[in-house]
Image (cartoon, rainbow, N blue to C red):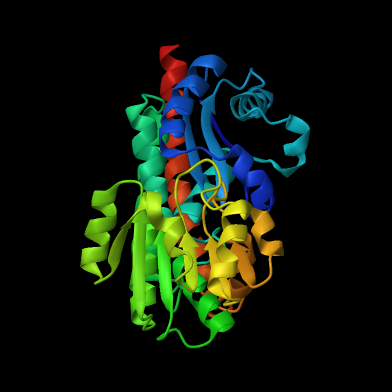
Length: 347
């Protein structure tokens, strides 16, 4: 029983590559099943977020699982392997364990110490279990990862002063537009990130907030919780003439705002600047809109510059965090060794 992680993240690949290999929530469930069946892996789990696509695998060491997983990604997404092969990292056994524990604790995130990733890891684990792709080893590994992340947050100061991608997006809007108390914002997407965005926009005194989502009930519920206004997803383009800030984070696999939409819209705005942040992977806003006058488009990778301003304090806590991770990895690896010995005796 051997363990590895194969993946790309924001450190090894730009959003243009990551979005081509990303999995939707439903896609990950289907892919988990296909991955295990086609490659004959003992166990597998796909973790796909805006900053990473990783496949965790328990495998037979005698098989070339790395080439198989690379080819699987290429076939599944219809992307030529040459486009991303040099961006992929492979970590095995203890190195893979420590990597996952760091990911779950937010230490490998764009925003060091952010807590949103723990929920994403938990969801990926749940989806893989529902696909019957995990087994004894990955179940124990991911439960240990989530437990370790909790220890890191409670026993260190890594989260003090930490920012999330959502808060960075709002800070960037303030930096570009100045005061926000006379601005109107439109949030497209009512998931966990949308909720965080509403919180930060409200805290920063944005005058008016609109929420659009493909599921009207989600938009209405979120709007009601923050004294915002829900708008029909089909009608959000009509509202772009009146807003100052647009933040998009949907699960759509393609653009929901296209250059042609913006070309017909901008004359109605009478040269007023429009600030757009696209937090989605795959991206939801046509990158060509950024070439238009008075349109300021930023994507998830653009936020990294602002994030770096907030890192210095939390960097000082990393030694304490990694000490906890190493102790947890020791515990898990001892369990792995014992499991291998049991399996060898019964083989």
